[in-house]
Length: 120
Image (cartoon, rainbow, N blue to C red; front, side, top):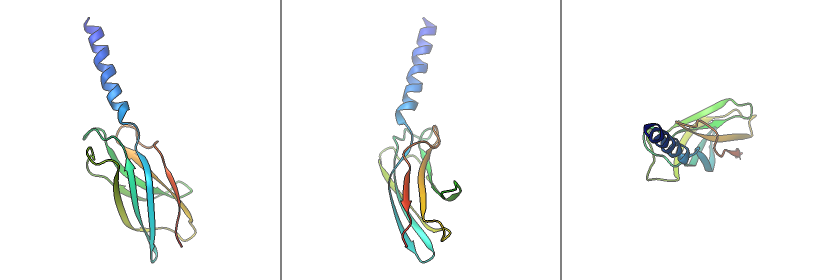
């Protein structure tokens, strides 16, 4: 009986972690400001609290190099989806497209990514 109870509890715990899923980038706005870029990124993730939340999003060059990171310092349980900005991102003039992807504490990367053309 105890073994069955333990299995049920473990199943419930693993299901709750899986329910939050991966962090998805749902919208990206990019503006050029002189020689740098400003990003406004909307992320969707069913944050559950301090143990499972979207903790950052990154701007990635076509070669996989991370150009910038926007750290998210707390869960957004009651604010979904949420938008955060990062200004002053320096990107080589040769780069014309970047990928924005979000990260969460449990799944890492893996949700929806958005590829954006950089404005002239």
